[in-house]
Amino acid sequence: MHIAGFQSISLNEYPGQISAIVFTQGCNFRCPYCHNPELQKFLTNTDKEYRELLQEEDVLDKISKLKDKITGVTISGGEPLTWNDLAVFMKKIKNRGLLVKLNTNGSYFYRLKYLIDNNLVDYVDMDVKAPPNKYKKIAGDDIDLDSVKKSVEYLKSSDVDHIFTTVWDKDLLTEKDTKYILKWVGSSRHEIREKI
Image (cartoon, rainbow, N blue to C red; front, side, top):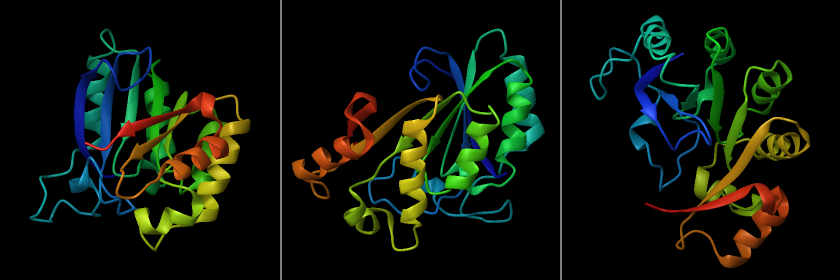
């Protein structure tokens, strides 16, 4: 797993918890308003455009040292589900007695389902970009929209705590779009965030 950043303490990233944040490198979406655009590209330690990636064991060691200050760890990105070893990393966090929150775009349905089915994630924040007919305009052409739809439906039917969020960009979405999204995901677990 490519870890590009680590934040020791956050009071507002994981609802009701004090969490550390692990940022993964690489994302399969290309949203124009991305709040972490430097994490979109898939880079390696030899890439001169980006600082050196963090070692997983060093990050886990930092998390262990924070155990008396935090109650959970948020894994964000980039898109964390890009990495097929994410489940192993999450299990190591859970074995330390901490909760795990995942921020995802929902495009890797089977990996998300595996995490939920195996109790490796306690809270999921899925960013729903748009109604299905506008997804490619916002996220890019190389997305698996069917996987996104499956992730929405699976989260809605699951027992895992979750929220759906949408970034409001008036240049990309209309009020009609947000009404559709609210109907699609269920308005009681949806939050619209203003584009920064």
